[in-house]
Image 1: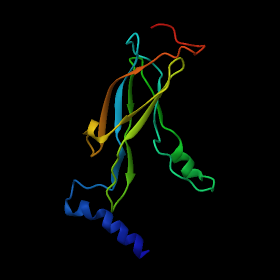
Image 2: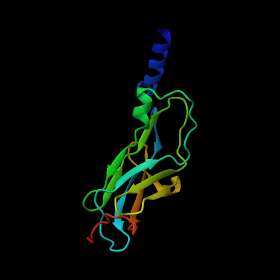
Image 3: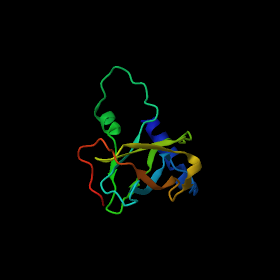
Length: 156
């Protein structure tokens, strides 16, 4: 019980001392925004699946994942709007006594009738966002049509 009280007291220390720039929640992957366009027509592509993907899969043991691990591993997918825009939220992790940073983030774009695209963003491409996180404006992402697809989308 004493350990929990001490940990709780340490967590309250910044608030009690008036420290406003410190947080136990740290950005581990930036917010990524942008717009997806057809590479040929330059028209927006709606309903493109946008998600982070692991660039270097972590080694796992042979034990099957448990409930919380399954939830954490579930991919967070956003769909582009009618104007092709997307907003992939930043990811944060709790780390009270260490500094966590991100080196790069791989983002994948998938849509039926188009070739999948995975691209990489680095901290040099990011800017600071409110709340202490990082934000990347990906700009226009151009998807190439898949000429082998049987259900290729009609021209916009």
